[in-house]
Length: 185
Image 1 (tube, rainbow, N blue to C red):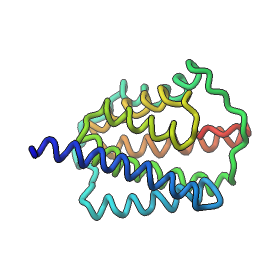
Image 2 (tube, rainbow, N blue to C red):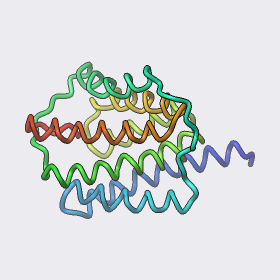
Image 3 (cartoon, rainbow, N blue to C red):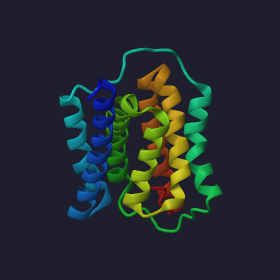
Image 4 (cartoon, one colour):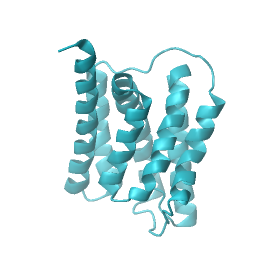
């Protein structure tokens, strides 16, 4: 088996592990935020033990990437007619804490492990598919794909900035969801 084939297998295994861990946590815990904390704290710790790190380079800001990350998710949902109807299921503080852990962990797992092995487009596809499968909301798929591709463009230049933007966009989604009483996740 070639090194490239091993890397691809490793990336796919991590994508499966992430999906499985969140699916199990969602079925095993009482609330979504608790599930995120259980799954993503464990995944983040495992990723660090496996050597995942954000690359230290600072190639600056990708304005195109950050724009796509910012508008991709809401635009994709609008294009496919994904309507927000449910209230956020838990309190704002709980959701903020959980989704910040999710952002950091997704950058360490999807961004630092899966994406280098599979490339941005395949990773964005699996990232979007994971959300569609877990949440049973297929209309989110194209927006999540665009969100990830925007972060990937930034990650190539400066991974820490991608993580900070990911965390900020998650936080903005939580606040918007609680202000409007319409869950964004």
